[in-house]
Structure formats: C-alpha cells, structure tokens
Length: 328
Ligand SMILES: NC(=O)c1ccc[n+]([C@@H]2O[C@H](COP(=O)([O-])OP(=O)(O)OC[C@H]3O[C@@H](n4cnc5c(N)ncnc54)[C@H](OP(=O)(O)O)[C@@H]3O)[C@@H](O)[C@H]2O)c1
Image (cartoon, rainbow, N blue to C red; front, top):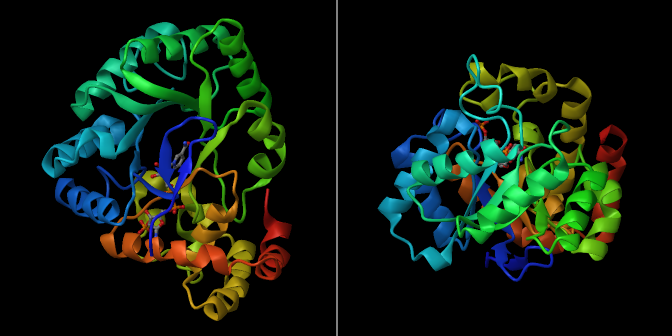
C-alpha cells in the first residue's frame, strides 16, 4: 500500500494520489482529537494534501485543521493545505459584498480570515468554490493572482466551473502575465463523470489543467451502506445535511451498487475501495479527495491504492455496464 504522487496538472508540485478533505466531517462528526488522529493516519500513509473550505462548518473546519496541524508539528514543506472561497461566512443582513461572490473586496478579506483561522502564513492551494456570474472573470483572476503575489497562497484554481469559464480565466491570466489557475476541483465518481471525461477534455493538454476530484463515494452511496435506508450515524443522518438523503437512498442507484458488489468481491476489495480506485484510475486526476468520519474508514479507503492496477479494461467495462446508464 505505497502512496504514489502525481503532478498537479502542469504545476510542479506533486500531490498524493489519495488526499483527505473535511467537508461535513470536521466540526460536525469529527472533533479536534479525532482530526489529529485521522490526519496523522493519513500523513503516515503518505497523504500530503488536506482539503478544506471557508464555508465548511462555518469556519470551524479550518480552525480545527489548524489546531491539528499545530499539534502534529509536521515540517511545512511536507504537506499542502487548501481552502475555497465563494459563499462567505458573514451571510447576514447587509453582507451584500460578502456572500456568493468572487469580487475582489471579498476575496482579499476572505484569504486573511482563512489564514487566521488556520494559523498558517500561507495556504498551498486556494479555489474559487463556484463560478460567480456577477463578477467579471478578470476581476477574480487579478484578485487570485494578487493573493499569490502577496505570498498568502501558492497556487489557485476553480471548483465546479464550466470548461468555458476555466478557459476564459486562463486566457486572461496568460494575456496579462498573471498567475494562472492550475487546477479544477470537480465532483467525480461512478455516477457523476461527464464533466471530467467530456466537458474538460480539451483543457488537460491545452492548458495543463490538474484535477483534485471530490466525493469519490458519492457521499457514501458507493459503499453500499444505504441499501436498506439511512444507517444511524451516517452522513445522511446528520440533520443539517438532510438534503443529501434523497440522492443517497435513490433506489436505482442502490440497486446498481448491489450489482457492483460481486465485482468488488472478485477483486478482493470493498465497494468503497473499488469506487475510489476507479476515480484514481483516470490519469487526468491529480488526486482523489476522500472523506472519512472515522479513522477505520480512512484506513480501509487507503486500500484503494492497491486496487487501481486491478481495474483492467475488462473490469472497467463491467463496471461501466452497471454504472454508466445512471451517470451524469
Ligand atoms: N469543491 C467542492 O464543491 C466539494 C464538494 C464536496 C466535497 N469536497 C471535498 O471532497 C472531500 C471528499 O468528499 P466527500 O466527503 O463527499 O467524499 P466521499 O468519499 O464521497 O464521502 C465520504 C463519506 O462517506 C462515508 N465513508 C467514507 N469511507 C467509508 C467506508 N469505507 N465505509 C463506509 N462509509 C464510508 C463517510 O461518511 P459517514 O460515515 O458519515 O456516512 C465519509 O465522510 C470533502 O471532504 C471536501 O474536501 C469538495
């Protein structure tokens, strides 16, 4: 189970093939002690990239990760931390320029807030968490580039932007000699793949786009745990994430997951390991950002590394036959 590392697209920095994110978990299911335990287990297994966002648990996820990093005392050169901006933390009343935006005023203040919560001098990657149709892309590109020039972050990218928006941002940066976006963070799993496999196809070679993909288990659906409804303690049981319930208990997708189980069994792995390995099998993917509410899940998921080479064209075709008809 040796970790492998891939370049972040055309950027020189290398990220572990599997990485660990904090959405839903930190601040909801995972406290400071568990965060330390999980990040230590991840780091010991070779994970060098930890994903976060300003909006996760209303800023607490960044605070918790920062506390964990101070406890763990790893050399700063040995890990990468990210955050993402868009939704804003102050969404009350007159927060007109501080929510659902990528305007310069918000971004320049958001980076300082994140650095403070993390207790870090710089972040390695920062993302525009969604596209903002109400701010000129040039304004956003200049702000993200300036944050890098100021030394507050090292690389920047986008999350869930269209291919056209990514290309426009890259072109503006190229034209004005600004820091270019190097990475996109899209959803990518067996039931959600068209954007990565089709829409972005031109961007990989043309602009050297890297990918840090999210939700390889479709929030847990691909583990098979939702086949008999919502298990206690699972993500779908967390009240503030009730919006995920309908998708996680989708009868057709759960039936497809049941059909995938024998394939995983033949490979000698769990469904979760097969699904994570499937995402990592795509050479365009720089890192698969995994999630875990318990250290045992993380340990199991790390076993996906050994499954990647078992996904032969024949096995992939069998998986496609089950999952592709339900994928978007
Ligand atoms: N850019 C974006 O817009 C965006 C959006 C979403 C996520 N992300 C990033 O991507 C990361 C990963 O996303 P994700 O957490 O949705 O990934 P995921 O792998 O689809 O789901 C992870 C969740 O599935 C369950 N799980 C994981 N391994 C399991 C196992 N072996 N057996 C049973 N259950 C297991 C756990 O939830 P329970 O135990 O609670 O059921 C865990 O928290 C996030 O932390 C975040 O950093 C980014």
